[in-house]
Amino acid sequence: MEPAKQRRKLADQIDVREHDPRSPIPPYTRASISPKTNSNSTNNEEEEEQEQEEQEQEEFKSSELGKWSSLTDALLHSILRRLDTLEDFFAFRGVCRGWRSLAAPSSAALASQPPLILLARCHSCTEALYDIASRRLYSLHLPWRLFSRFSIGYSHGFVITTTQPPLPKLLLWNLFTDAKIRLPKAPEPFDRVILSSNPSSPGCLAILFSRSGSTVQYCHVGDHLWKLSCRNSPRASVIDWSVIEDMIFFKGKLFALTSAEQLVEVELFPLPKLTLLRAETGAAVKRGYGERWLAECGGELLMVFVRIEMVFHVYRWDLGRGRWVEVSSLGGKALFMGSRGFAASIEPMCSEVRENCIYYAGNWKDQWFVFSLEDRSLEFVPAASCGLLGGRTSLPPVWVFPSLC
Figure: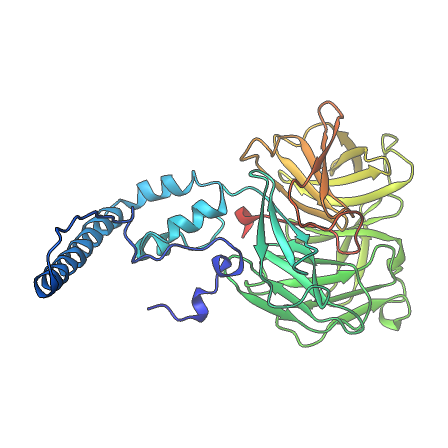
């Protein structure tokens, strides 16, 4: 028997329940008609029929579950790759213990699952997962109350959550395995968090910063305190972090984007150091009011510029020429962005995820936008479910990717 704590997976967090592996599939039913007799003989016959029925049910369970559990792993993996909803995935896990073990939550087992959006709900004062493919809303029972802790990002399979300042407490939570990793209390304000790798792996580095902020906080997962680098620190007085718009880990290195669209390589150890990668930005870089983020797609380092009217421009970093070059394709992938920047780039796995498109979930609770780089069109997509908080929000939606868990 599996320990109770180990069974607290996503199926226990959302209203998608796994079937009891002991139950027959399909359910066994039996109709019987008993002649009218009296008293003792009738009772004896009913008891005998009940015993016979129970015996037949047990035989049916053994035979049917035996048939299901005897399927080859190759066939089961083939079935698993075709499951594109969480209901189907957890129903698959509920058939028997063998299937449950084979379908343990992982990036491979959940590869066919579409992206989800973590949204705020009004009536239950909690958060919910919205499936953009099936247009379904999954109630999510969080281990904390809404507004006492909130989600601000998703990285390497973990939702990044924090409490309110001062000294906010950060918690990384894997929705699908229920793994939890705590980070130290943050002594300085921040609005963005990035991770160098899966936080369950050794050496993962976490970085806290704010757009145009004066301080960068960083630590390895497992450390008890954050290290700080700021303009007023005598050990890092030459670094002006306020010019930094965004940061990203790319191919094992940390890069930053300045307000002048310059790319900078960041070294934090033994002491913080910034190295400018050529000062040329290129005449093709669009100017104007908007936000600029760094992103990664198909092995390329990108800069994404979104204007206030929701028009996107994407540039890749040309290492040889030392400049940004505008692109009109994402190499067949889809790029997901949020109000705090880059979320992920993935291969399309359903009709609702299209190649060479940017999916942007900004400061609206119940909608997102799809921008095509091919024809420069913009599509508004509402979350077609009731019970969602509408309008603008200080708790923006967060993209969640089961296939990257």
